[in-house]
Length: 255
Image (cartoon, rainbow, N blue to C red):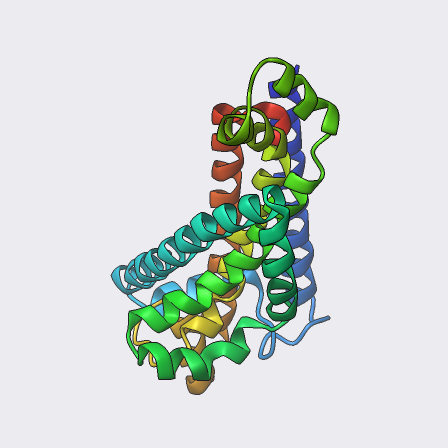
């Protein structure tokens, strides 16, 4: 039953996305939208493939995915550990939460000057900016999941003889998994959202670089193609992450 509902959701989502692209295509083809400013999706895709070698496009994708993976992985590990610890140990939460809430609203773009000073113009500065995009939603979701645990669950664990770290691992963390799963998927999406900003830092490859380079050249087709490409890869990988979460953690733990 649940699998059937998930497949229905996926089909409806694909249909909705296809309908949106169809409306975009029709609006551009009919002249309602200027093709010089916002070309049709098919025009942007065909135009890009005619001017940019496929090998170059795949190279940009591979480079960006590498940066996203490392930035997200660091954000997920640190965000999960700090969020769980802050929610479980009250004294630690009192210390960490004000600092996190102070830094959380700052957009990753604002950190670029400091990233360059701290890490230079190489890959670490780009990974750091993506890390920031993933870290804050994950640490916040982990913390909220921990403080939102039903006290009755903890009392049940205690009556079974669980104390300290065992109570945390066996009861608290599994109970917080729905929030953790939500934070991970939001963090993954935001990693793509800050990709273009991260690749402003002296990049010579990547999907964000491809878009910014096309802007300098005035190539609207490549700009639109890059936007579609980032969105499509994010959508596909998000579905994949959701499937892994449902398989490894539980169907009810994934949105």
